[in-house]
Length: 274
Length: 180
Image (cartoon, rainbow over all chains, first blue to last red; front, top):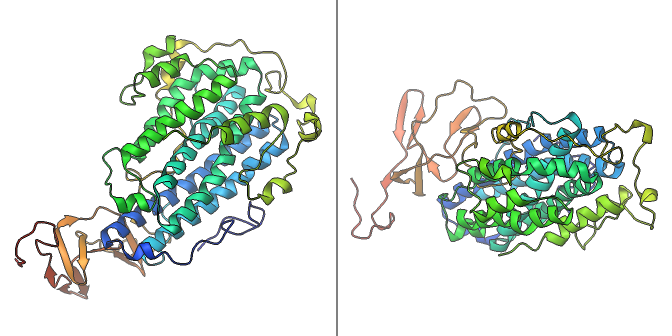
């Protein structure tokens, strides 16, 4: 297996802070169908984690260009390594679900937002805000939800490891946003509705409401779509919007969109005027 | 359930950006934090290296004048058609690769026609087809765990691996067992 994470990473080359359980009796009780389904889900997550490593390379470069504190740049560099570990951790969980060693999934292509019309400086900040304030904060809420419903000891252990790292990744964005001047924050605020809309929409594509659900899937890290969806919207209402307000950023368009149900079928263009 | 992560992510993140103060990710220690020299001794500039001031651009976030550029409305409308950062998690289906072959060992190998759910050894549920990715093992495509193509082929001779069919009970339909 081609190992990408290094000794310079968070745990000095170890995959996890604590060793994963070597066995999980609850896996033996699963049907072959549930095990196959869970293996597929976790292997898919491995592919997604690997793509996010590429995303953090972009974030790190943006922080460097913006002259961010070296500690913040280091944190973004470590996030790249974190995502390499997450890839392997998710592949490992998938293999345990499958009952045999699975190879790494094919790489997924990263498409970086264009933010056409933004200055290069603003685009950098929008990169950091989009990936960390929106995406990683949402990821933390997703993991919190999965952990709340998980019962298998292997998956609980893996989810805790993932969540502790994602918290750091979200902080990068909040720290950067807090460090910019109020004028820049005001500029960023204008872009937030389209960015939040697109981000929630893609999260919903990956966790559809009508995805198969069962107690077994919930117990091993994949709660029902409606439960996940509530967590995704909750990330906006409980974490992201309050944080933006704390930074003095206008949130009226976001508030109105969320108030109307945070729909992602049609872009809420009319709310841009608020 | 409302998220309990607000203080951990948002408040701590904002504190980091405004004061250079940084809290640990979790109460049980994070050697990486210390290695990176996070800390706060009362002087934000002592804890945070902002880099040489002359390298900051006029619109640098840590200094410079407040920008007053307001994007035109159609720019923001077009922003609804932009790409977004892809999620890190999910119960993925849309972009899950249909074939898992990182080494490219199965290029040109024949694909199984279908993958059926395997209920027990040699017992197939022909009412359920699997859509999960195929796995390349030793140069051959295999159905995902818990599924079977229903055939094992050696040279040109193919033998059914479905010795038994799922019973109505196994399918959750009740009634007497029966084979087609």
